[in-house]
Length: 70
Image (cartoon, rainbow, N blue to C red; front, side, top):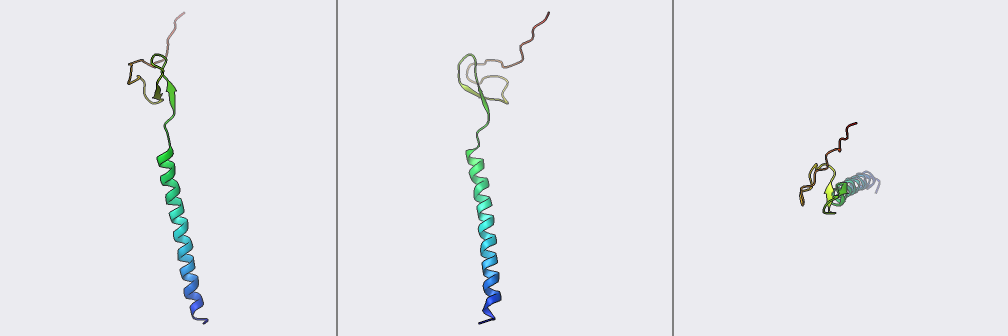
């Protein structure tokens, strides 16, 4: 029976390591599927537009900075 103890320890360590790796992979997949890009509301058509877009793709509103001169 003492000869089975190291084999059992190896199997349990591999199982624990495998479950930990699968948990991390599942967590990364879940986060990548649930992530949504930050958005802002278009002033003209009131639809959500991603922050990295400079122009609304629905109505063409330009989100460029408003320049005022004195």
